[in-house]
Length: 250
Ligand code: OAD
Image 1 (cartoon, rainbow, N blue to C red):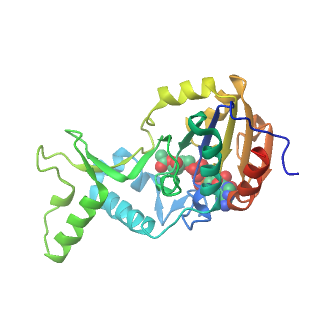
Image 2: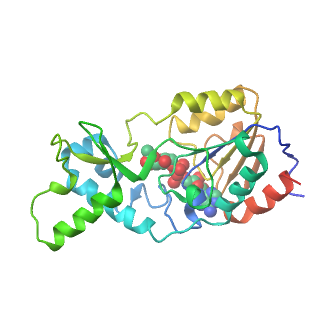
Image 3: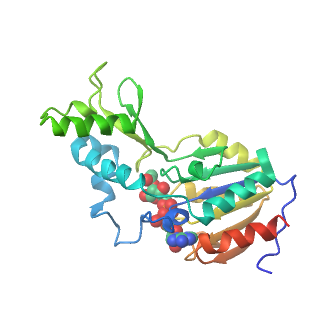
């Protein structure tokens, strides 16, 4: 027996996931290489200032991330969450800090992508949306035509610049009102694969605890905010979650 927790179909569950849940799919977590992210500091590639300074570098970085993500697949942790959704239906809300789309690929719905998604981009002036695949295809065609204009990230309608739909440091995460409402109503809060160091995401666990939810955590290391977790399981989510979900729902 791994767990004392039991779920009923009436439980309202909010799940918060972070980079750790995708680690076993081969996606690197953010804080696993001396504060560098694929050899770049966060300030160089993941702030609005970085984009204003050097949009080309930022786009090169996210183009590489986008291409890497085309080859990754959900792992047993993502599928275990899908099983939980099959059990709880609409009573499960899945909040993710990840931009990789792996929860969708595992079949989950009812997902709130609080840090955005690499799948889409938008113009920073007129807010027109475009899929990132369309931008990248334009980029590849431009390079093969030896095009020297940076037309691939410039909006032909308003001359603004396309940027990835990713919440950068210093920006406000998406859907905070909806997230707060769901946490106010939840009976259980499950946090998986996140270091508990990036705010406001790290505060959601604290909020859930204050509103009276039972809190559960699954993480490789002890997260910064572990003191707010009632039942903590230390280890890899892809190994632990399939067993935990089976016990929670039996
Ligand atoms: P981090 O890289 O900060 O933390 C990943 C966490 O996952 C760590 O606590 C690891 O111990 C844990 N972990 C690693 N492998 C695991 C596994 N197989 N199973 C379970 N846990 C595992 O990533 P996040 O907390 O998600 O923001 O980072 C939060 C935000 O900071 C990201 O969304 C991103 C980042 O910079 C933006 O881009 C705005």
